[in-house]
Amino acid sequence: MAVEEYEQDGVWVIHARPDEETPGRPPLVFVHGGQHASWSFDHLVPFFADRGWECLAFDWFNHGRSRKTDAETFLKRGIGDVTTEIAIVSSLADGPPLLVGHSMGAAASMAYAAENAVAGLVLLTPVLPAGIGESETSEAGEFPVDMEQLFPPLPLARARELFFTSLDEVSARRYTRLLTAESPVAVRQAAESSLEVDLDAFDVPSLVIAGGKDRMCAPASQEKLATVLGSEYFVLESAGHDDVLLHHAAWQVVAARIHDWLADTL
Image (cartoon, rainbow, N blue to C red; front, side, top):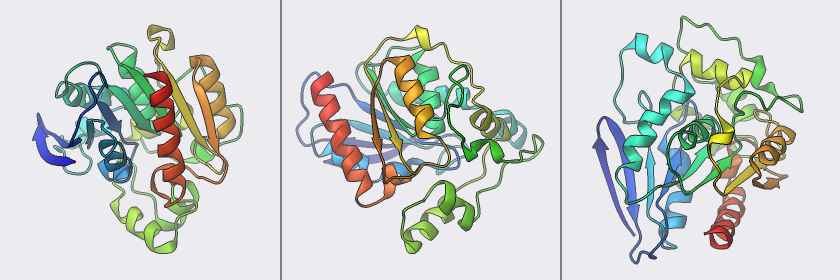
């Protein structure tokens, strides 16, 4: 596996190429969630690159090492605006990508797929687009959001509740320190499931993965989204919102399930 890190049009990209690429496979583009960055996929990118997949992960603008916009622009940036970064990164690979999105990044991936060619979608603990509706109580709607201020990174106790449910204390502290401020528009869209996406505009293979302990995006709502999209659905009962990416045991189960689905579907 060869890994390059570079900036493309203001977007910081981690580009992993396998030692031997398998012809006919689409590139995998990994889209992180709100307050996060490409570190979310530190486990999944090498897993798939080692198995012959070209992988590209990136940081949204104002996140990680990507370009910082002015404060007024950041305040008004919604989840749908992340399609700009997805387009920049997707242009680096040959052919339509298969998007692997987490949380808000999953919603942004659906928005991108509604207007652009993609090979498929993997939606990990996805934020719901408008029109799906909550079918189970979620804590996502409990955030007080001041639309004139950036939404601050969650403190450790709250981050452990909502993001890092099953992580050990050292890991939870480490990842909490990496969280960044978020646009209030994006946070409100996630909390209210208000991002408008034309779900009828794309008809591609998709996989929805939920965490049984997810207090941010309720599993029953994830299942409802999978039904609407005609997706394969899998719930890892022992996992929380970020556990599917970061917990030492959970991410391996998730990666294996995605790999099997890719093999069966593509």
